[in-house]
Amino acid sequence: MSQGRTLYLETMGCQMNALDSELTLGALMADGYRVTEDMAAADLVVLNTCSVRQHAEDKVYSRLGNLKRPADRNAQQIVAVIGCMAERDGDGLIEKMPHVDILCGPGELHRLPSLIHDVRSTHGRAVALSGRLRDRSTGVRHVPAHDDLESLDSGRTFGRTAHAATPKVFGRHQAYVRITRGCNKYCTFCVVPYTRGPERHRPPGQIVEEVRRLAASGVVEVTLLGQTVNHYRYPADSGAGETSFSDLLRRVHDEVPELPRLRFVTSFPRDFTDEALEVMAASPRICKYLHIPAQSGSDTVLKRMNRGYTAEEYLSLLERARSIMPDICLAGDMIVGFSGESEADFLLSMDLLREAKYKNCFIFKYSPRPDTVADNRLPDDVPDEEKRRRNNDMLSLQAGISLANNRAMLDRTVEVLAEGPSKSAIKAQESEQTRGQEVDPQATLRDQLVGRTQGDQIVVFTGAPEMVGRILQVTITAATPYTLHGDVADTGAAPSPTGHSLTVVGN
Ligand code: SAM
Image (cartoon, rainbow, N blue to C red):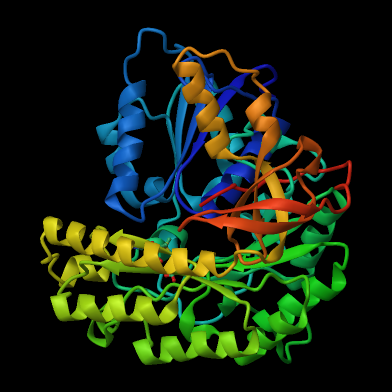
């Protein structure tokens, strides 16, 4: 046991990392650690890293650089780099940063507590990477009950508040539940299949049970997670037939009626069936929201990316989704400046954005990732300045689309899950403090809450702290491209007093 020792944990990257951090934190707290925000003084520093773009890796090197030689650094401190960058960079990272004691890939996280014990007792180093995950897999794989990594998810502690120690990261009434690990798509730009390994699906019964226990402990909204979440499938015990993604959605919705909200991310366009859309439409507690990255609007670029669909096929899926669920909110991801992207290709991406009318779209400049197919075979031939220009053009186009969507919400009364104090209210309060004005520390926070609609739109409204965790009716009174503002029309029922959960608030 590590009773009384302190732990600093920082999470970068996607929702999958946020979930890994929560589960890892639960395991380390069970081992006796308590959380600190003081990185230099902590007995254990854990950086949960992302490799998806170079920028994310640079951030980790900068954090590690800060830790190298500060005079006030805890002399007994153990530094662990976990997650995708540990897996991708491997020993290279330890060579560059000799004060790193532990490297642990996302496929080995269940081993972290014992690696820490080993390092403390031997004063050596520990490396746990799943080089084997690089094996290409095209077949359907499922997670057997004895799978070691499965113990990370199935060992989740319910009704405990690991997340309460990190209120900046986790919200109380939302939780992630993994349904699929890894990815088999091998998009040519993407590092995920190399860092998280082949796709593996968790048994449906285990998923339903996890959601049920989260709901019983006060969670109001569960997000099912997978890199290509809608590719979920699990063979029946009898060997005949399988549980598809739409079957799973139906099961979770119907077998956990006490859960007010269910969502899922991230969907892969080619795998979306009409059956899944119909289950969404028929299930009132499944949020009418799809995050479904297109990446490009040019068929030549999509082909070079190995996405497996054309722009027309993609747009026809959005059309089907909207015809089945007219109120559905759609979000996308786009990459600008991918290898060989001409101005004409870029303009096709802009056209796709105009037609898709996303609620919001995450737009990224192409960042070559070592050892991916694109990095090995395709030149990174769009100059950075041009990538930046395309990125800015696309951001401003999307801002106009988002604003028009949000303005259409004016005067409507919508269901909002109150998540907590509004970040902008916190910022306003901090800036008043910086200007030396006296503020009642609770005043602004007490007033301004932030929440989300079923469609994942952010709503800021005036409310009381006890509303957090409730689903409220809010009438929309003002709109900006990224935020709606409103007034509470109905305060909803109080959340369960046993409230517990963990999720990232915001993207
Ligand atoms: N699995 C999802 C998919 O491909 O549809 C998303 C996974 S990825 C972690 C999140 C987003 O990062 C992608 O949708 C893509 O837009 C972006 N991304 C991934 N690799 C990138 C790269 N090499 N350069 C720039 N953006 C990248």
